[in-house]
Length: 405
Ligand SMILES: *[C@@H]1O[C@H](CO)[C@@H](O)[C@H](O)[C@H]1NC(C)=O
Ligand SMILES: *[C@@H]1O[C@H](CO)[C@@H](O)[C@H](O)[C@H]1NC(C)=O
Ligand SMILES: *[C@@H]1O[C@H](CO)[C@@H](O)[C@H](O)[C@H]1NC(C)=O
Image 1: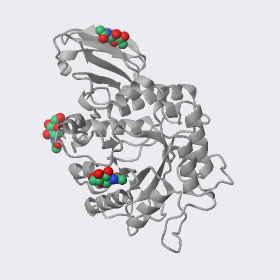
Image 2: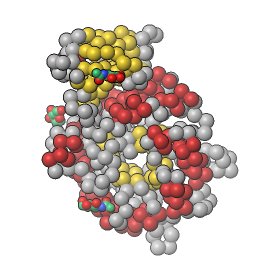
Image 3: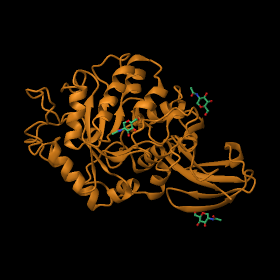
Image 4: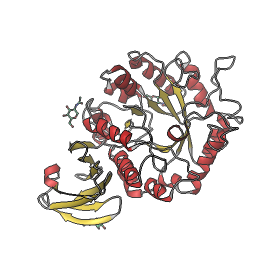
């Protein structure tokens, strides 16, 4: 127990959901950001939400090295379900778009050593107006278990915000009762903060959910991603305190390879998701992804920062509005840290920045071995008083790892 608390990196020792899952942030591919709710497969055969799409992404994940890099969940979002439950009240997949059925899709993924994520809603309807789990929690949990689902994202549309303190734990109870271990994703705090301006009960959220959304959906623009950095940097609700093995803050999907971010901004998003110990869900067409975007997603060093077993969420130490911010994430190797220098400025030249490690709490007298993580460049050995110089591209990031000597 002591070990667990120390490892959790979670100051208040709030206990995590005890299902043995999400000991590090889950990684995979999620359809929503890129593919949304397209149901017209005649008109858009390659980009509608159907079983072919998920199978095609699974094939790419195996063939192109994503699975080996750690991406394992193939995650369906809203719009998979038929508009009506069956005569027994059971959820059913849309028969035109998922003719083989969900269980067949789960089997397909499991044979490839991948996992299936699915979507429901804690309210009466999903955000897109399909059946939600409100009055069917036990039945839906059982259905998901029977199909072989491995992760359940549970959205927060069309639901009473105050009741979420009871409804999310209740659905978690039924998921647990199935005996099948399923990662439980909750939109509980996001709905309460965004829609209700409420202060969520994070101790309870950590106890009942494996991942939790705190904020709005990510959209495909730098403006939007900067808004996420700001929200997480301010950390007004202190949610960073509650991240640790078994439960993590989820700032939503990655935009590598999509339309809105430059390659430099994609580095910034991926790097910051690593620093914030966020689930890593790509949302891109893996059949046509740009090689530079792919290289970001497969960057082993950055993934290792995200997947560090301590599981602590990095926090912003200080920020200058619309310009530079410095973030720090403690790592499992005692006394070591990842430090991010995020440059939100769009001035057309790389920004030089200098810092003493001692000024950001790295005070080991023997100094540190410092490596630039993204580019895998050994920067050298630094005492707390010696100057570390970095050069940060416009709207991009530099991340260093500092290991005590
Ligand atoms: C259900 O909860 C119990 C108690 O926390 C835990 O030991 C068990 O592993 C959980 N089982 C599943 C399938 O999540
Ligand atoms: C969160 O942790 C910080 C220290 O990192 C502490 O100052 C703060 O009081 C904590 N707040 C809550 C509500 O947990
Ligand atoms: C410092 O880090 C580099 C990797 O960037 C590694 O090759 C080197 O062995 C490390 N030095 C020490 C003394 O650990």
